[in-house]
Length: 232
Length: 81
Image (tube, each protein chain N blue to C red):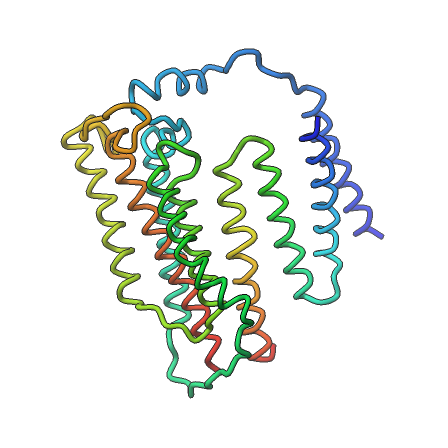
């Protein structure tokens, strides 16, 4: 009884909140102060055609470094807890995957990885960026693991990609502080022409490193989870 | 106008899938329903002109999370909790 009352009260409060949002909502005819600053100054200051990327990588670059660190800590903890135990290994004989899945995996896997690389390399021009591209690459590896559960990745290679790209990201940030105007400043490489692939200074480099790092981390998590399925 | 109608239909499907995820008898069906919620959420993000959020939601929300749930579910069944 009390539980139902509580749920009804919670729903009513939520409805009141959303209703008040709806009633007081009005369209802005011009941009408020902060978005207007970004919209006006991104192209001359940062040289990126995609304003979202400019905000994520340069204006709020320190927050992105924090997000990458959080993901790194999560991946390391998962690797620590899912370490190979010495328990007797129980050989799994999964049902062979269907012809449709294994054939389409062979066709789609290179395309998905290529698309992920495209998304993170063009982060300063088109929607998307390092996190999106890395997640797309990880879904490619997921497809590989679903079609062939016994597949073995090289953990050493994935770990090397992850640590080298993470370290290079911080080194580029420090280079920005030494050669440019501040930590993670992108202007120590020439900005180039707005809208071309080699423009926006260090943004494409940083986003490619983030993409490789996120892709390697997520693939590593998936592979760890797939590996412990074999144990008792 | 078409976008608004599409958004309303998708929102209704999304809410019904969320209710199905809560009330489903089998856990596997609940995990699939929550994956569909994420998939529809990514389409709605696209309609709201946020393509980068839509990409993340489609790849992580409906792809990786669903499969990680299945992996963990399989592991829990095996060790017989």
